[in-house]
Picture 1 (cartoon, rainbow, N blue to C red):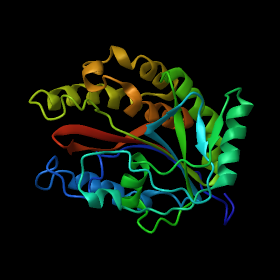
Picture 2 (cartoon, rainbow, N blue to C red):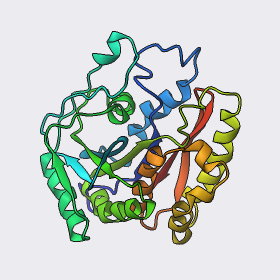
Picture 3 (cartoon, rainbow, N blue to C red):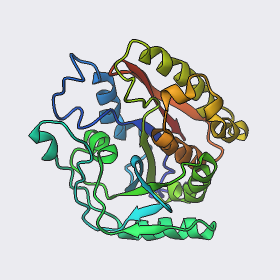
Length: 271
């Protein structure tokens, strides 16, 4: 690599906690639970090979009929949660958008025959502004979101990731934001942690499997132990498929694993 060349970015899947955590006190998060996740997200930029030029976030909280990118140069906030104190609806993370990156994403997907759309009004949802306000508190890195595709087909989302892989050599950090456990009905029940651990053990092995076998395992995620108890609906898992698709031949690693709200959460990084 020549001096001044952009170093290849990793591609990362992170758990984003829940609601406006950790910026608003919540009865759902007693004591210091969540401090290790806060520390992981806060320390994330220091572990990158170089500062990213832009962030491309695939959030669990946006689905469209075709993969759709934010096109605004100044995305607003989208407080896509309810039942929290008033201060939860005043959180700000005014990162600039990146219309040029949005067009680049559309071209890469289009070159692979994947239809796309744009949304000039979409704001940052809490899958983006909550975790990455911790990572980039100055909101000084251009950021766009890419939606999931309705139907939540893992094969399609792995293909989306593969199409986007060239961005890693262009200074773009591809981030999947979801949760390795997401069953809100059961979250605070006695059985939830056991379910989350059983599924997380399988997911960790699949996500870090040899690249030649990783996609096959992730596609078959519904056959994993406790799969549908951990994910009654898989929108919080699908961002991992995009990240793993963009990983190429990179082997994955577990970069965070701890409890949040009493259940096991994990983060995975490639590269």
